[in-house]
Amino acid sequence: MHEITLYGRQGCHLCDDARAVIAKVAAELGVKWTEVDIDGSPELREKYNDMIPVTLVDGVQHDFWRVSEERLRAALGG
Image (cartoon, rainbow, N blue to C red):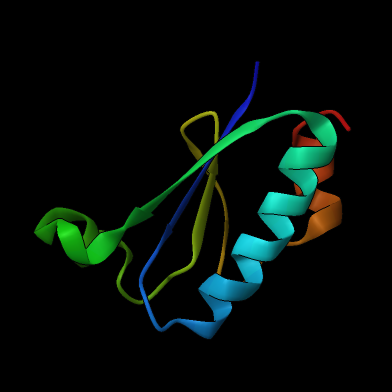
């Protein structure tokens, strides 16, 4: 079973866009997804600050800045 993780922060319009795409695809394919606010961790903020939103599929970085619905579906086998 696949899992999607979204790294982002509050007030980020690209994160809002990514969240909408991920929620849609995850719901249609029955995939679990979680969101992590990078501002809650100095390590995550340092690593991803200039790249958010960052999407991981099964723990591996998949996309950053924008989430492509087609690429996400392909990575999930859907």
